[in-house]
Structures are given as structure tokens and as C-alpha cells.
Image (cartoon, rainbow, N blue to C red; front, side):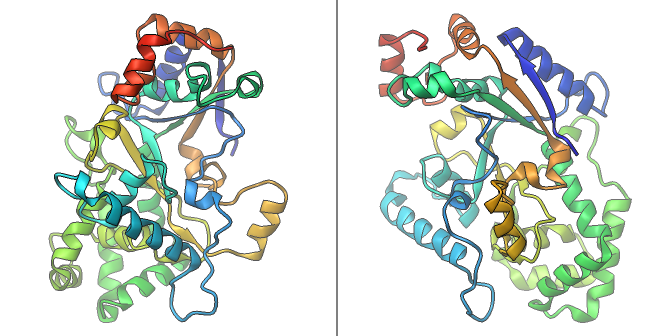
Length: 364
């Protein structure tokens, strides 16, 4: 499937195009706009890959028993040291690994989290940063880059994950069996599968007032609940009682990092608590990537300059993505500044605000 792509030449066209994409994605009526997430990139050649996956680290176990890989170690060692050096900055510390990854991502650590924004304007500023910041970007970058903004339908993406886990019997059965084996739920396997199928078939959507929240998850909150009382979770899963059976599976896959044997499942779209003014200002939301086991065919794809980790190369994710290419980026950047939008919207820190006051211009 080819990803839906549009080219725009002005700020007005950009807003109109997003409205058009919103109408196409809307299935809840005119007065209920869909939830869209945005990611601005300074060049269309940049792909939707988290920074940790851009390193030359792969999900290889190096002959170890179990599922602890080089990629797990790379994440562990970064997280441990980041917590040690930054713990004192938090009035309320992040409660889980995925929450720490969110904070680390926003402060330039390499993680398996890809940050998005709920704001199309903030993402547009990100895309046009080369033309708003002459210290961070060079003149060569401004001459050669073609900025773009990616748009994601997060609820649709997560619905794809739910549907796949519930209905693709062969892959689902193998994956879920491995996960529930640790809870010793083998005798309840069929009941669990039945519960999962019923959950999707019953279409557990919320009311019309809050339907925009459907399938957009707080993975950290799910993880906290599971860790609080694992024996209770086991009992509820056995009985099919007052628990969404998908939550445990998603926690094991996307939070704990269970290795997936193929690249079928896409990243999971999640919201997290804001842990800094920067994340709050940027209206930050995230996609959490699972750990995919490296295969020989993946190396072949990389050799042809196709990254198998990229979100746009996932067969499920690509159905939920749109792309807007920004032609005439200097013109659009000028229109942003005229409307009072600048880098201080992204980075609400005193040095950035001071720089905006001193250097109110477009760079060519």
C-alpha cells in the first residue's frame, strides 16, 4: 500500500490538507473530529525510526539462553545511568521503564520511543526548524532539505494491533502461549483466547462523548497495575474477570520488550504523564517500538537502503499514516512567524525565549 502523500505551498494549504485528512479519517460524525498525531521532520529522507534503532545494535541474543539481547542491554545501561544522574530533578519520579524512556527521548537520549505531538502547529515548527534556527542547522541543510510532516491515526493503529492479536490464529496462538506460559495459565488457554475474541467482537467502544479516546492507551498505567499485584492479574486472567486481557499482552510485548520473531506487529501508540514543561509544551505523545529479532532478510533490506525497522515499512502501520511535504519552506516559516509561532513554543526555556526576542527572522 502506498502512503497517502500531499504537497503544500503555504501555511493555509497545510491547515486545509490536515482538515481534509481528518474528514477522510472521521467515522464518528462531523461534530466529532478524529484524533490525529503529528511528527515534523526537517527532511523527507528521515524515516520513522526511534533513535536507539538507528544505532548499529540489533536484537541478537549472542547465544544466551532466553530473550535478553544486545538491544535490551543498550536500553538498560542508558536508562540506569540516566536515572542515576537525573533522579533529583523530579518532584514525582516516573513509575515505569516506559515513562523513563519518554523523558529520556525528550532530552536527546537514544530510546526505542518515537515522539509525536497532538498539535499540527508544533510539528510544523519542528519540520521548519532549519529556517528558524541558524545555530543548530547549516546553510547547506537549508539549501538541500525538503521538510515534511507525518500524520498518524493512533486509535486506528492500536485497533489494528487488537484485531491482529485476536484473529490471526497461528501467529497469535504461538505468541500468546509463550506469554501466558510464565503465568502457568496453560489450562486456561482456550478461555483466554475466547475472552480476547469476544472483547473485539463486542466492540467495546466508549460513549459518543469520549469516543475519541478509544484504543489510545496509557501503557505506563497498565504496567503499574500489573506490577502492583501479579497474582491478582493471574487470577483475573484465569477467570476472564474485570480485566482487559490485551493489557497484559501489550505490557509484556511493548513495555518489557518480549522479542517478536517477525515484524508484523507495529509500534503501539501511547500517552504518558507529562514529566517536564518541555513535553507539556510540545503536547508530547509516543509510539513504543517492540523488539524485533534480526533476520537474514533484514540485513538484505538494509543493504538496499530499506530499513525494516521504519514505521512506514510496517504493513499495519502504513495504513494509518499520511505525509505532507512542505514545498516553499521559507515562505511557510515566514507565515508562521507572522502568526506569532516560533521555537519558544517547542522549548519554553529562558535561553530559547531570549534568542527568539533577539533573532526574529527566517534563515535562507
